[in-house]
Amino acid sequence: MKKLLKNTINKHPDQYNLKHNSKMNDCTIFTVCMMAFFSCTVLNLFQMRYIDYSIENFLNLFADKSKFINAILISLTYDGMTVAILMAAIFYEWFNDKRYNDRKSILTGTIISFFSGVLSRLVQLTIPSHLRPLHDPNLHLVTPYWIDPNSFNHWASFPSDHAALLGGLSYTIYRSNPSLGKLSFLFILFINVTRVFFGYHFFTDVVAGTALGISCVIASAPLDKTKLVNWLILLETRKPALFYGGAFYLCLCISNMFGEYRDEAARLKSAIHIHRHHQN
Image (cartoon, rainbow, N blue to C red; front, side):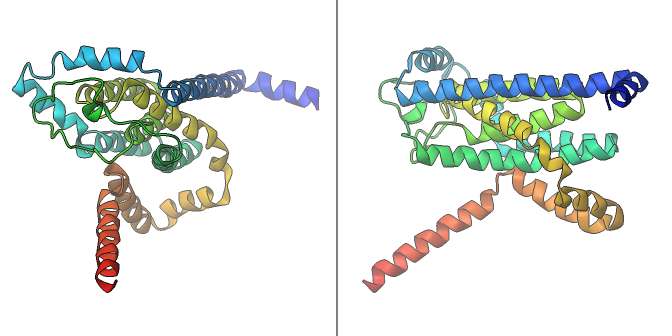
């Protein structure tokens, strides 16, 4: 058995080393991300705000300096200008790299990235929440140009579900194409700094969200070998019209984080509440 393994490694040394190094890198990145996530969680649970407040106060110095620059930057807080761009990179990699295993990785990574955002929202509802920077009375922030001061005033801040989704998608791209993945991480770094600048999130919110998204994608690697993923990959070959029609709609919904569905659910909830109130 040892001889067979040795011969296999010697026969394909580069391929073996590449896979081995990839697994080692994933383990290291997963460990670092989980440490970052739990460290940020501890800071928030014990109300240790020095780092968050320092960064927020520094960025807020530029909040009312230029209406023009703020108008440009605020576009980076829209899902159509952020998540959709990463989705385009996902599609690029899908068609650029037709290797069977890489496509499975792209498929599972994209879906798990969305669920990392859902998990982030569940964490928001589970742990003691704190106000977003815009509404934190201890900060005394100047409201940036073009921002409604009442934005997200009923939403918890930690961790950022947007950052979780963006982090997961970027790492999915990175696993398939490291060069494009690095550009994706630079892109989401700029996005997250922008969201902190506008007071939507604290620094630890976006760090924890990004770390959570990356960790979820790494932890989902075993799903690449499941029958469901194999069936979906085969479906792309056997019934491409059905596969790409469904993939387009799913990616469109992920790009806006199922915003229309969430809005409709909120309207139905409000309608049911009003109906019950009138009955009583």
